[in-house]
Image (cartoon, helix red, strand yellow):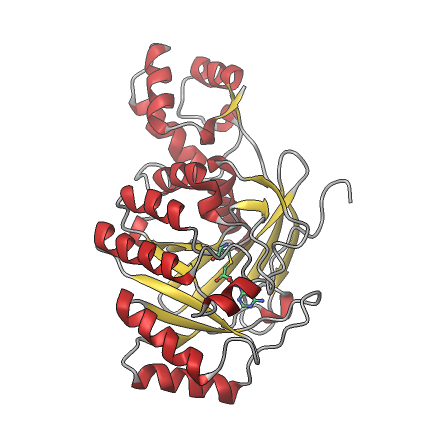
Length: 340
Ligand code: SAH
């Protein structure tokens, strides 16, 4: 049997029609799914016989909330979810003045090996299915007793290393009858895998693409990001992405003391940002116990930001949310599994 949330809506719609029911039954079904109902029997506006047929054909998973932590500082909520096979991933619910956001994971673990990130410790276990990503959104909303207007794929994993499932997830979550979060309200973050960026560009989705640059020169970038395919190659992929999609890109730049915070690097970063027309997001490095790297001081970050501003770059420093519960960028991990 297959997980109904991991097959395209159109396929389910056709199968329902083949069973002799009108197509609007599929819409009703997906409305239930969007509300977090995970039992066909409870879908009371569907005919009983159809509920039974669906139950014989499809699986519905119910992610289990293993742990929920709420930040005393800013109300950010971090959830640890157990998936069907006992693996677990984290999500983060954040409140901003423009609305609520959820940060979701795209893989169990990660194989990109960034030297500053907790998510990659222990490597990649597996990619998440479209339905699992969908449920991260729906069930985090339930856990927070609140709705989100924005989604960021910035949790555990590299979304473009799971592109097919991420695309299926984006199609599902943005469907009017399946949660209706517009693609313009969704950000996908990548460590900068050039070929996959071009495959994503070809889809021409109005999402926001965020590229984790973290260093403007190859010597530094290859040292902290083993997935680096060359800064110039990444920039060319960014240029193409912008040309094909007509969408702006943003660069993520985690400020690491003595590694990527020099004046020379600020100048080089500014040149890249201007070439691509990218917005730069500076992130004071978040603490990861095993990594031994330190954030740049706030004075250095302010100076770095000023330099970029003076060079005409659109730059902001990311507000840190959920730091007291290890819910900030790079701090999510698959801490516990069922067999732990
Ligand atoms: N794999 C994707 C998405 C997950 S990481 C990517 O690389 O973009 C989300 C963001 O957090 C990335 O920009 C990542 O580089 C950044 N990050 C990772 N560890 C961090 C840390 N310790 N401090 C600050 N940002 C970090």
